Image 1 (cartoon, rainbow, N blue to C red):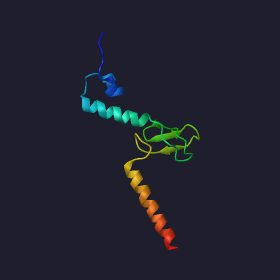
Image 2 (image 1 turned 90 degrees about the horizontal axis):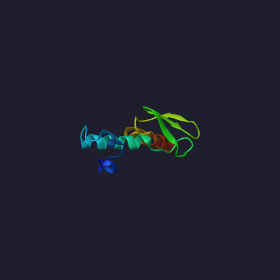
Image 3 (image 1 turned 90 degrees about the vertical axis):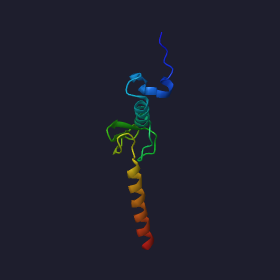
Image 4 (image 1 turned 30 degrees about the horizontal axis):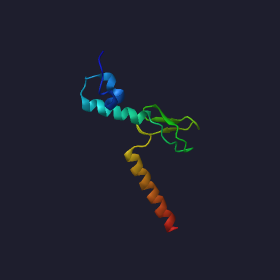
Length: 96
């Protein structure tokens, strides 16, 4: 019987065995963990936002469908843009 000692470290990428190299398998594992994780819904704030397809995220509770990143509902660039928009809106409201 063959014993696999590294499947705990590699996780879901353990299905590839020794093929493709360790670094690529670890990257794949990290991406698969991100995309299969439950995220918080921006509409109802319930942690049931799941990936339906590339960049499509659906809340299992309220049924809200949002566009986001390929592997996470919000990308780093999206966060920067959201902060910039919030800053502009706050500065306009202070002027009035």
